[in-house]
Amino acid sequence: MNKTLTVGEILKPQGIRGEVKVMPFTDDAEDFRAFSRVMADGVAYKVLSVRTGGGFVYLGLKGVADRNSAELLRGKRLEVPREDAPAPAEGRYYIADLLGCTLVTEEGDVLGTLTDVRQAATDIYVADMDGKEVLFPAADGVVTQVNVEEGRITVSKKRFYEVAVL
Image 1 (tube, rainbow, N blue to C red):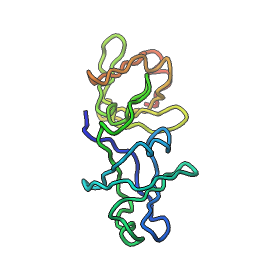
Image 2 (spheres, rainbow, N blue to C red; image 1 turned 120 degrees about the vertical axis):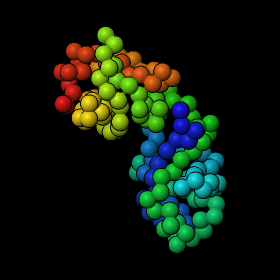
Image 3 (cartoon, one colour; image 1 turned 180 degrees about the vertical axis):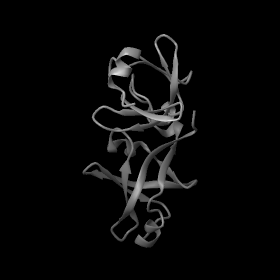
Image 4 (cartoon, rainbow, N blue to C red; image 1 turned 60 degrees about the vertical axis):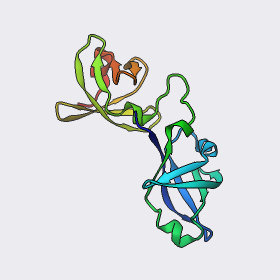
């Protein structure tokens, strides 16, 4: 498992005092209130202030005192150490832990490897199946079991082939 989790992307500076506007990759923008530090390009920043609004997060970071220094962070991904991140609710997983998992049927047939998760009302999983990109919803009845420790996602073969975009 990764030692850090990507939690958002800095979109732009916000105002003239160094605050940055962040697109959160967490379930709830309020999750950022639990972070005492974040990292961008391997540089750690102490979080001085957090406010949320409209689905975005606005962060004040130590060492980012003006708009010019905030501009240098535009487009950077924010990471937090795994131990600082809240534990996901039961039946929920960090996307970073799902990527690279082997996709198998309940019968044990290997279908491919999970390469991406696209967020929507129901997450859309993207798998590499013999070099071909296949999309399918992570819905009940399709995904029957997730075991991130073993790196395996089990699907119902029948439901998978009914809903997968091959």
